[in-house]
Image (cartoon, rainbow, N blue to C red; front, side, top):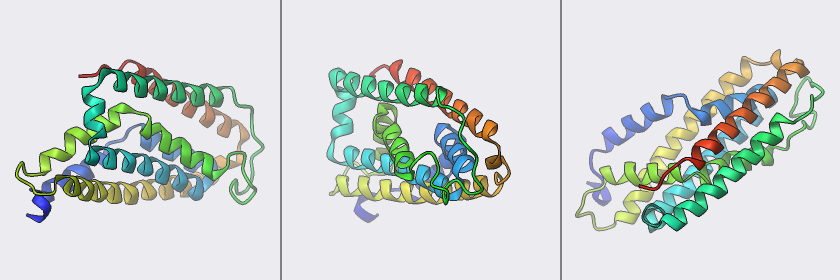
Length: 213
């Protein structure tokens, strides 16, 4: 039982099943892949997984526990996250049509890859629901008598994130390869912006409605 980790096989299977479940992260990766090709989707995937990594380390050192226990901390993070998500969403909803390019990335694109990366990262970092997920999920696979619980948390988190990253990069590659013609249509790209904008606003409203437990 390495570092007090128990039922590692069940943890890996559970993590894979969670990754296979479509959700907002998958929608964001697919949308960016369709818009900007493989590199755009990969930037979105890496950003999302980086945001998860922040929560893993936070859970390991106890910040997520503080977030769960303190209504003030929870509220601050909740409203910061909701505000950011709604801001990004409204900005995308109000975006103007973009000139299609044969290759959005090689042509420079309208959106820098670093912006896509940070949007994905901050979407998860500022979402207290993600913090509470790791705080609830990881301890189930760490024995109560484990001598190094923080290291066990980090190791489990890294395993989960590596698997998530591989899955998300695969989704990005598949979506990008299937969307070559879509990127030729400025109208389609505009509606993708609208859809992603609506997704961000929806997530912002959901985060704002979260209640500390």
